[in-house]
Image 1 (cartoon, rainbow, N blue to C red):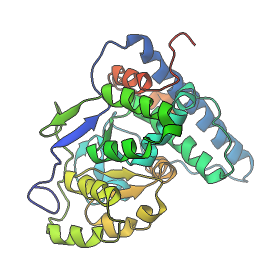
Image 2: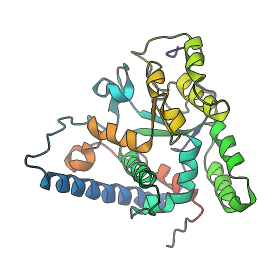
Image 3: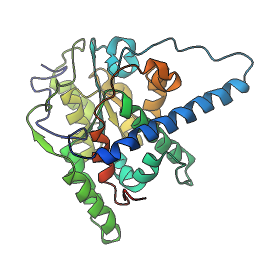
Length: 295
């Protein structure tokens, strides 16, 4: 049973980490990881040069690619145990990936936007992709987000983006039943709350796809709903008790750094575990409209 009802898992999920013969793309993952690790270490050195005393050590050494839930209550609330970090993508994150995915994977600078915070969020997403290469993180796209994105991308002036979306969805699979080949998100340690309380909390989310997506993520037991929607992010406190963190990429990045999840980047000797299957990298890259293996 989930934290707040009899049916904790949505019956349809789109997964990124599938299997395919994309071995020629697997090196892109380690390229991004190494680029972002170097950038992160350089940034910390720059910060230390500007202060009088060394930065305090985080002091958390990861056990492996998985996460220890008790060690990061900000992220996992009251959960206990060990396992993957499940992150559901909102539609706006999905669309940004179509637009900037090539630059994200190349590890270079991202386009400068008039809104500096938006650029920072893209950089946060880039760093999360790099961590995903080495840690046990499961990215999830909900079917409602697919419908929402198709609606947003159907205008004639966005025809190229619409074609990219079709390529993206064809590279993935809609899965009937529970989480394929893996255990679903652990809910041990969460309070079992009636679904009526979740329905009450959802009234603060705008009606339509936004409300459906957040509600589905909460019922599934997903750990994080990643979004840039400020209206959704304002409801973060209301959804904590359901074990769902509403966070932007930058919010999530800062929290993961704070709980030691990036130690494998800061101190590569801690990344002693076998690398996750890198064929999943190929699936994300193949979906990009500007992807060309020869460039």
